[in-house]
Length: 288
Image (tube, rainbow, N blue to C red):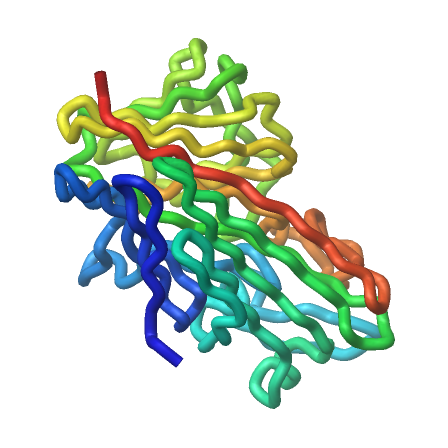
């Protein structure tokens, strides 16, 4: 199997690696504009897939049916090889199933698919999860795309409808009970060198259907559609030349969480042979 797949539509192309089913490039061919962060020493990823958990668990542990399991932050999908099960000019479908490695960390049978479809300047990213085992399966998932900018300072985010969304404060990588305002009261979030000094900004149950990343200096506008996604993360390394806009179906542990996974906020409990599907889309455009 090829290590990566390129899909295209009109003037746009997208490259996805089989390792992690990770989107690593979206280009506008006539201008040779690259929209995705190209990894590097500051942060060595492009757009990792988060599964079967989003964020960090306390001591990297969770409990299920009285047994303790250890699992990596954001789960294992981002560091495993997916199978390419379908490919066409503008669409690619990758699949991950359980194996010896996953069963040690996550004792469930599953088929997890990540679907990319490019239509002009619009890239849709879909997630399909099927519980192929006989017991109820707990899971969450999310996206973590990093968009390239020249530098913070002249970049901002615009929420469609939320004028003063409150961000849940992280403490030692875990969700606290405190929130803070991060916009100007008009739904605009300025990205500066200090925006992420206290880690990611985390939003719950936004009413906005989309958020835009706008960089006049870079001549780019990105619109991430959030319809139906309960959580959103915004993150970058402080001062880095990228911004991540992350639709999530799940969260890191709360500070006082007791590790019983079926009580964890954001966890989906999937019955045997049941399926769960969600998607979001990104529109790539130029500043006018």
